[in-house]
Length: 327
Image (cartoon, rainbow, N blue to C red):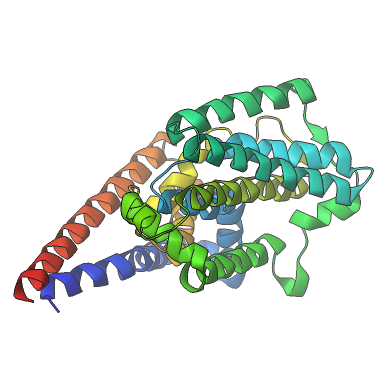
């Protein structure tokens, strides 16, 4: 195997984990007086990543893998939380069911517009984002909805076995997504469609079905995120998730998910979530820094990550061409 190809694959698979551990160790040294490396601090770090867009990032990974984007996830997040609060205070199962159903329906409509109506995912999901946010404002009259059902509050603010429930849910969903991507036909189809849509059609894959499935899963994850966030805060905010789609995309990019589709791992997205969480934590601890530097740092990291991806895939393509010539 070509040395450049080996180097590219090594960087692709390990760089995100390396960046995470470098930031983690440096933070532990800088904030040793705050016990940054303690079990409680690590729990807070993962919990913060989960509650600040981690579930959105997992759902977004499905869509990015097929070479698309979903700008509506922040609005769908708010919709899931609002529906759960409106109906769940009287009937928890009804509230949860309606929240999940609404998220899946929004995702399905996004996928249908992209796959069947051939509308750009940027335009289709932008329209969905605006429509859903407007609908939420009408439903709530722009007022937060308190959660009075104690059973609902346990969904996002309990600690089974001493571990916060958000950490457990994030870990379980990440492992489930990894299994789907590596061991199922849907997972293989995601990479195939993202890598070469026309070739996938020629192979007999149902490309439209794969696209709709990816968007539907993304919408489902967004509504779940909104319900967990609302239960954690004991209230559903109509403005929840505003502009969080950018955070979700950033987490995916830092995790090595190729934004043009066909490349990336859910394990990478998981570490991308943790990297964003560490950066946020560093700026929270260093209270004397202007918060705008946080955006500058994250933007720089994303550009570096995408730049590394470009070089890696360039090396890989060269290696494949060379192997083809030699054979």
